[in-house]
Picture 1 (cartoon, rainbow, N blue to C red):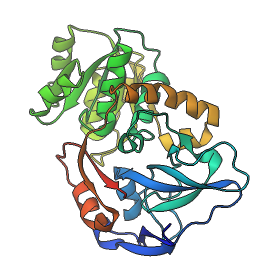
Picture 2 (picture 1 turned 135 degrees about the vertical axis):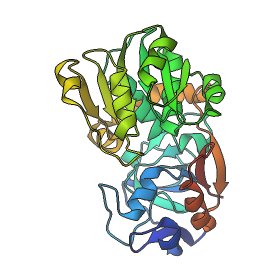
Picture 3 (picture 1 turned 180 degrees about the vertical axis):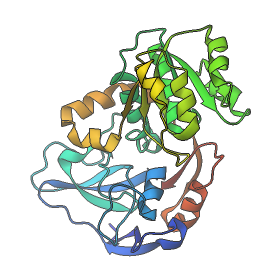
Picture 4 (picture 1 turned 120 degrees about the vertical axis):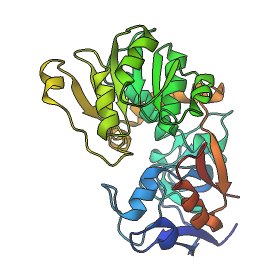
Length: 330
């Protein structure tokens, strides 16, 4: 086995392509309660780039290795570990930095992935699909045939919402900014796909024949979030989980007084940290089942080796991608 590994490291905050370096490290040695995981795949998420830039609420001590998400194979067990076997594919926790060849992790923090799921897909189940599942379950009690509306529907999380809602027989209104996305998202299961704009409320009303929409999912903020809120029925709930426009939520008082809307937010890392291991497994079970059946698939635009991490983060920072940029390991 290699006596050393490579890891992506940044010593100061800044533009990811400028501040990231690849460094050689000793092969990890597991403590009694740890397992060594050889990485197979790790996606590059907006939160990863934000953390390297110093714009994320959690700042690790520097120098640090980025990577909130990833999957790998258990290759070594600490003396006291009974819950795992070598060769198991596992999902890693979000606080260890996954952009490295191998890492020692507390065994109890690893989630074992069932057979039949590709490592690349397993690596991307923990943030976006888990967020989508919680968005559809924790805020409004939806029944089959109920409607919800979301902006940035072509994002990874937006596509997960479409796929999971479709499986649960909820109906989705999906708001995008580019016409070429309409057919694509309809093919993935989106019931209605509309272009964002000033007439959104009327467009939604016409397309849904005036359906009652109680749940809105916002990852953009600014005017887009306000247009979403205007599409909700009185007593409806708008849940925010991103701010792609970097604009705050400006809520007219009338929406609170006359429509009594509820405004909520979710940060999946916080939910994950507060959940018990059995609650986590409970959340992963339906996602694993959907992934195994090919119903939950995250699109990948390009995979890079760790040695090309600078090119990978530069690519991930571009808009108008058709899928995720990932790091794949030997």
